[in-house]
Amino acid sequence: MTTYIDIALIITSIALIASVIMQNKGVGLGGLTGADSSNVFTARRGIEKTLFYITIGLSILFFILTFASVIVRS
Image 1 (cartoon, rainbow, N blue to C red):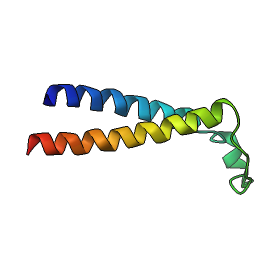
Image 2 (image 1 turned 180 degrees about the vertical axis):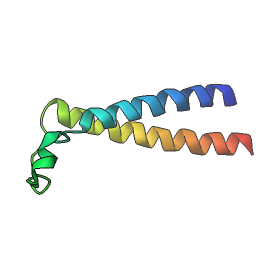
Image 3 (image 1 turned 45 degrees about the vertical axis):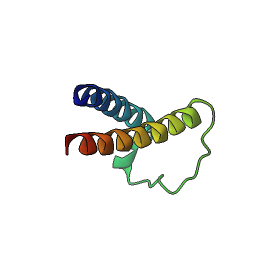
Image 4 (image 1 turned 120 degrees about the vertical axis):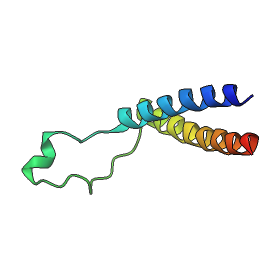
């Protein structure tokens, strides 16, 4: 059982890392100019909103699998 949880945890963590990396926007050469664009609010629409919800779901799944792994091992 621990093997299945470990495999699911690895797959979930890779998917979570990928979803967080895909959400990075505004991380380019614009930060070097000194213009601070981090105070600008933009609404999430379309694929950005879907990716945001997927990231939340993956993070919840990651914590559940982590707790399950600790409980099974002890």
